[in-house]
Image (tube, rainbow, N blue to C red):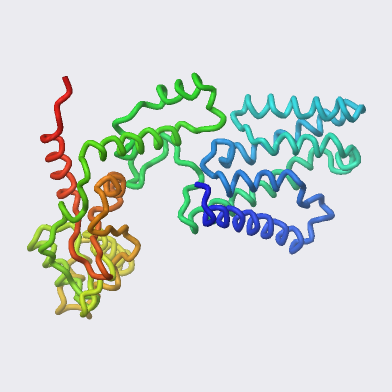
Amino acid sequence: MNTPKEALRAGMGALIGLGVAGFLLSFFDLQGAGLYLIAPFGASSVLLFAVPNSPLAQPWSAIVGNSVSALAGIAVCHMVSDPVLCVALAVGVAITAMILLRAVHPPGGAVAMVAALNPDLVADLGFRFAVTPVGVVTGILVLIAVFYARATGRTYPLRHFDDKSTHDTADRPPIERLGLDEGELNAILQQYRQSLNLGVEDLARLISAAEFQVAAHRTGPITAKQIMSRDLVTVDADTPLGEVADLFRRHGFKSLPVIEKDGRYIGVIFQIHLIRRAREDALRLDRGLLPAMARLIDLRRTAPVRAIEIMSVTEPRATASTPIAALLPLMADGACDAVPVIEDGKIIGIVTRTDLIAALAHAGLNSPTQP
């Protein structure tokens, strides 16, 4: 996404990554051991921080690609004395090795050139150059990129098909489950020769997003205001968890909005928040989960734990005019059970999965059937 915010995010990431790497080198005074910054690390930073979803920017590609390219450059430098032939051969061997190892990382070509153009460096460091600085500094950049992505709301490394989901199961996310399988997606990438530019997971997400958009078109201009639940049961920030649990049990809700005394919306409590808090207490007190739940709920046995202590303030929000097309992906992956509808800082309704399913079913019944 080419926005000023994204440009600043990427630039700051590269600044932090290279800055921290350089600081660590100087802090440990490792220059004498050959640990210093070289130009290809700037190119690696572009991939790691500007396009972290690219297959070329993943940890395996970055670390292995740069390291094996350094090995190729060093080996060729030992065998070939002509500088032009040495550079050409080093880069060619590096590219071949990266492709065979499924670790294509464009800065690797520059790493091979650095080795080929610096025979004195190669003579001094030998194959150790592939470890320090190349492997070590690339690893530092990758590690920083992981934490920076999480801190700025991005995903890195890219999730693979065989990775566990957010629920710690092997199921793919719901929005990807009805699409093409991994083999079919790979075939598409190979057919259009895009396997090095786009990953299978990226293609799956793009197809899923397009399918959601098509589904939204079929539902027509339905907004959150039309499908939201309006008769809300809410709690305030000081409501004890015992009362919160009673409300969940009495009404069968999965979520409860939290509001201030003046009606201003401040957060939401999901049932999972109660379970997590009980689990934390169980671990702390070395008790089972059910006794911990009872301890939370029974206000006569313990000082009340307030709603504000477990509520979430980071859940997505909607306005009355938000189309359901924008709500579909928010609740499809299982991370969000309900989306509050806010107007002038106050909650006027809430859209639950039940509301969304009913709206989609209604739209499906009223859409023209295909011949």
